[in-house]
Length: 165
Image (cartoon, rainbow, N blue to C red; front, side, top):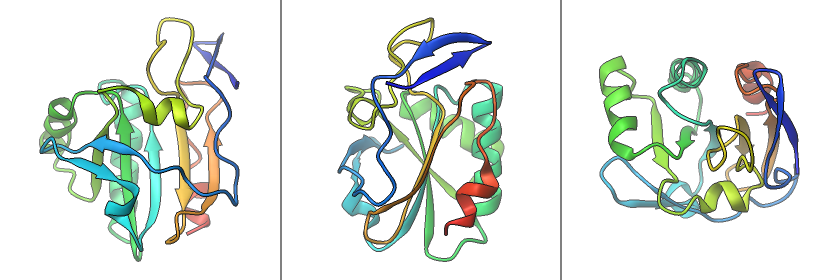
C-alpha cells in the first residue's frame, strides 16, 4: 500500500506499483468505441500509461495535453491515458481539445486495472478512483519506469517517463 496525499491529507492505494523489470499484467480496458483493448492490442509498441483519477480535473487534463504533445514525436510509442471515467467523457474531452496522439482507455466496469496494479485509491473522498501514476513499458511489456505521484494535485515527472523510451 502506498501512502499519498490529496490536498495534503493522507490517503492510501490498494498496493504497490509493478516493479521495474517485471511484466505488466494483461488488462481489459474499454476504448472510446466501447470495444475492449488488452495489452496484446499494443503488441510490439512501447507504452506510456498515464493513469489518473478523472479527465475532468485540471491536473489530469494537463497531463493528457502534455503527453499528447510529446506522443507525436515518439518512435514506436503509444500513450495510453487511463482513468475510471466513462469512455464518452474521455472522447468528449479529447474531441473538444483536438487531441489525436493519445488513446483513452476506461477502467469503469470493474476497476480491475487499478486493483491489479496497486493504484486504486482505497480511502478518502476519491476512494475507488485511480491514483496519479505513470508506468512505461518496452515493446515486450516489461516495465521500465514507474512513478506514483505523491500528491494527487501534482503533475507527474514527464521528463523522467520519456527519458526511458
